[in-house]
Structure formats: C-alpha cells, structure tokens
Amino acid sequence: MMLLTVVLLMQFGLPQDPSPTQQTQGTVTAGQNVSLSTTPQEPGGAAPGAKFTVRRLDWATRTALNSVVFRSGGHGLTTSGTYIEMVSRFLEPILLILALLAVRNRVKR
View 1: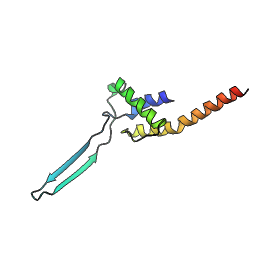
View 2: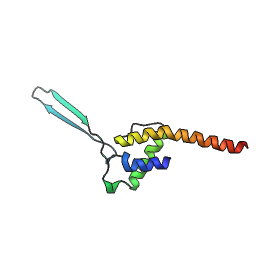
View 3: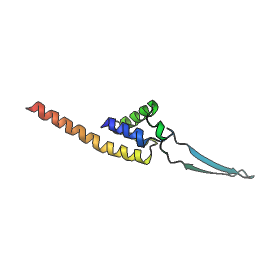
C-alpha cells in the first residue's frame, strides 16, 4: 500500500516545484505608507515527462512516510495529492491491523 501511495503521489500528487512560491506586490507612497498583498500560488502538477525521477521518488517517499507513519501532513501537495494522502491515512492502518489479525489467527492454531 505504501508503494502504491508513493507511485500515486509521484504521478498525481506532487507539484512541479517542491516549494510553491508566493508573490508579493506592494506600493510605497511618498508618506512612507507600504501596502502589500500576498497571494499564495496553487501548486500545479509536473510535466508528463518529468514525473518519474529520482528526486520525485525521494520526495514522494518522504511525503508518504511522513503523512502515514508520523502523521505530519501539511506538505505542498496538489489537490489530488491531498486526497491520496487522506485515503492512505485511512486505509493503511486498517490493512496493517487486518494483517496482524491474520498472523495471529495462523499462530493461534
């Protein structure tokens, strides 16, 4: 399941750039008033030819481990990546518990 999560994150969940930048625009008037507006950019997906690279494999593996094992979300994922992470957080512990119960039933006999 973790391998499937990593592959899905590499394909659909990781943005083009690991750190989405924010654009800040501002104006300075003569009386030293500063007006700034910051708009975060929505992370976009990678180009089709650049989805399966070693860097993205490392990034997807770290993201999957952090989100499922250590429960530290909040990575800059695309919308699809956010849903992939949520499904992984729900299914992987359930599958682990079922595997442990299956082993327990085998050992019990």
